Image (cartoon, rainbow, N blue to C red; front, side, top):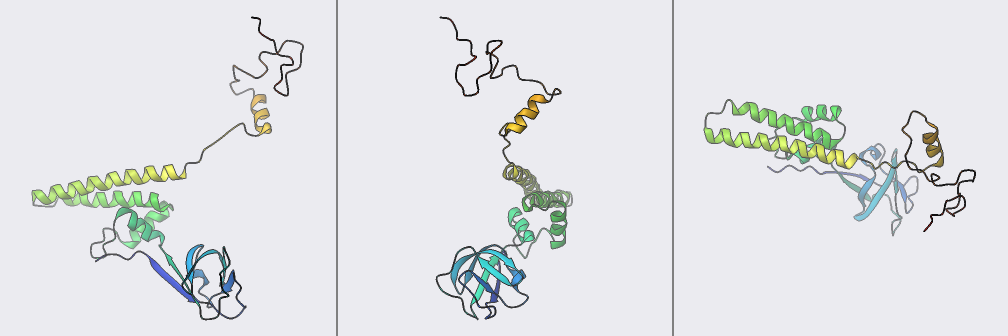
Length: 218
């Protein structure tokens, strides 16, 4: 049976405090069901900016004023469900991992993609061990191939997680950082500098002009 990993959550708009085009309250105690992201208010597609208690704030005004009884619906995929989706463990009649196992992986690696890499290795380990007990050669080969594929999936997930979390680093953008680097005698100083061609006894150029610069002879 196919696994439904999207979890619809809903509540009703209440009359107090009076709703506005961008802010309204939902039934007491149900605000925690919602998070920032796409949703529908009475069937109209909107985007939740934030949720504070039972107060919902939208990122853009609605074209109408919400009224009590309007239904707010949001479809959310949980962290455990993300892990199952990433490793393809979505068949409820043949799940390779228990929810408790996935919860442990998420404790070790809160990033769902990194947790999915551990999950893929766990499935591969189970399949590898099962190969030793199978009788029919055809089944052995099929399970061995599946284990290899899960190990490869784990590598791909780790690579993708590392790539998506990597941030570019640029140095020397602030004058204070540059001055600090120049004054640090423990660092290897650059061989080429801006003032290396200035004539002794003159001041270095401050505006990219040729003042203090030795003009070449031709």
